[in-house]
Length: 444
Image (cartoon, rainbow, N blue to C red):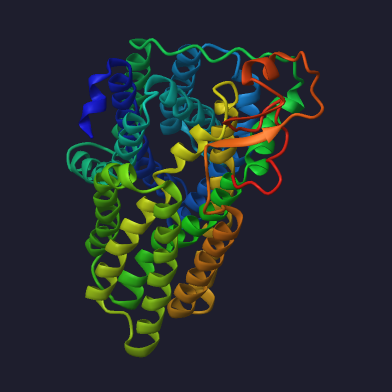
């Protein structure tokens, strides 16, 4: 897996990603302490609102930002967003009202919503080989999981020595270091668009390509399945551990650590698995596993109550399924769009996947507070299975990259027909200006 780090450009971008993630993790801890400093025991409300603002920014800003910035040099744009995020981190320690927190969080997360899809869309151009790109996706998954595990530990260690305001300084350093690493790279220039399109077309293009491609419609359903299971873990672990099992606070970290550990195990194994199996054969069974685990745990909770050991085992298995169901996503997006449209499609996935979290986060919290934890486990498990079943229907099992099709409406002298050797031909099929719909009767 580490062989992809031999590529200097990718190595620097990966390091920038890791450092920025650590900075973001420190910011999360510092923001919680800042909220407590401002509003005391209502800090949970502030953090919940901040999380909602983050998701709204991700859903609304990513496609619009991509439409405006798709023609800009990638390196300069990525550096600019890092500098904006560093600027917000500088300002946050000085806020005195919750409104100021909300405004700065929206600016911060809008910059992240612009940065992440652009970063993700650049990786396939840097690593064009499928095997290398698969390993890069697994490394990225590992980076996210390591951040979830290590950032709170690093923050806890720092807080034994310094005031929480220093954590904001760590965040600033992280974003500045990320920007410095990006500066040292030479990123491929985005493919120049061959058409003149208005802002509406550029904003919605990724979404239209996404919804017109059957395998991506299946991915949309899988986004909901992953979000439903993930929201159960992220939102309700603390409730289960402390309110139901009456265990100490550090046991919350242990449970979440098992979930993250399972995700890391899957990320380490996936490159070899994906060398042998198709994406669909990995992602759909993994999503189904998530639903079955939640429903099985709900049955145990109804019968014998929730046990600490069974919670840890279930969370470990959920982490494995969670990673396996979503890590190959980049491979699907890569094969479903031309190089020119890839940033727009990555932005659409970023927005749509976070829209699923925007629904499942509050749903998991509301169900847990009103109907009890066994019923919440069962409900989210059923949502996960229903979404997985939708993915099975939307994403046909026969999923070739090369699709035979015809262009009855194109002039015989059109360059595409000449390049493809005839009006009816086969090539790697994606939705673009010459291919508006998926061929009838053909899988996606």
